[in-house]
Length: 349
Image (cartoon, rainbow, N blue to C red; front, side, top):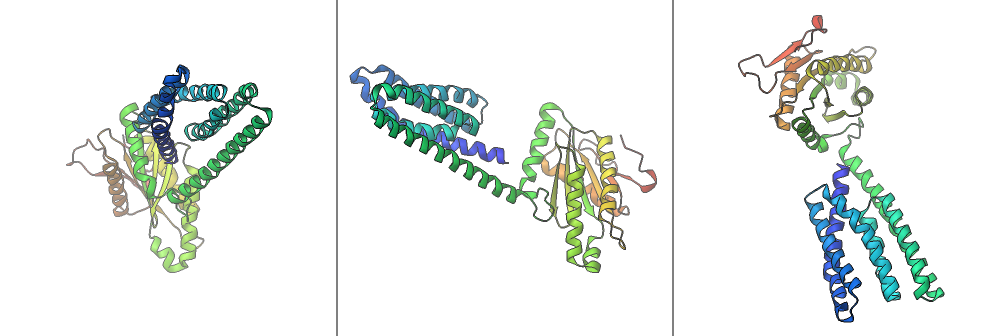
């Protein structure tokens, strides 16, 4: 999600810079036609066209936007250096929006490097066309603006990331919440269709959780939920994700996994959670429904099958794993397969 928001920020910046360059930069470039300063005209128009093309590619989420950016950054540095060499102080003024534009378009480290190169070239070229005192004042101002812009963007980015984490994270368990669930499921299904990589959903529910709150109080119930969050976080792999859907309901998204292994993982989680959540005088169990992704699935259908398997596990006596049928199996077949306690080592094909 954060990656999508960062893309939107750079997309907005690209559109804004393109509009500014077309409405302000291009007319000033055209004004130099009568003076015969063709590099100024060509550079200004080329910058406008490239920024417009980059903005369009960003809007289309095209990978070619990286190529356009790889052209815009060096061209912009060269063009701004030329403006300083040709127009002196007037050219120096264009370096200020150039610095800000590079910070907005490029990743932070690349922006630092690009602006360092720009500042160095401007000081070298400016030494030939500007008085030393004026050059030092202008260079110091450019450096101050560059540092301020960099620190401001970093502060805004960190604050935004912090807010994003708070939005998508359940405050009690530390797991992801429903906010990011649909994009995560849809991304896994797209990967399933594109690369034929398997994925599975585990729908988990703490059995008789209301009794925990009724007999021991909500503080103990909250502690049980926190332990569930810690156990799930410690048990899943790096590419997997765990969500708290609400109350005592959880969802685990497993990537790159087939049916038998998903059932094995579900069994391991069931036993781990039972051991971690049980109180000294109150054993706690977990029911789990397993659903394997199918190429024809929508995220809601995939999740619905996991929920269906979970409820059948509860109907079968709780404290067990129940596997939903694949999406392409006949509706007349049994809706799911349950792993009874006496046959936990049996994994359905």
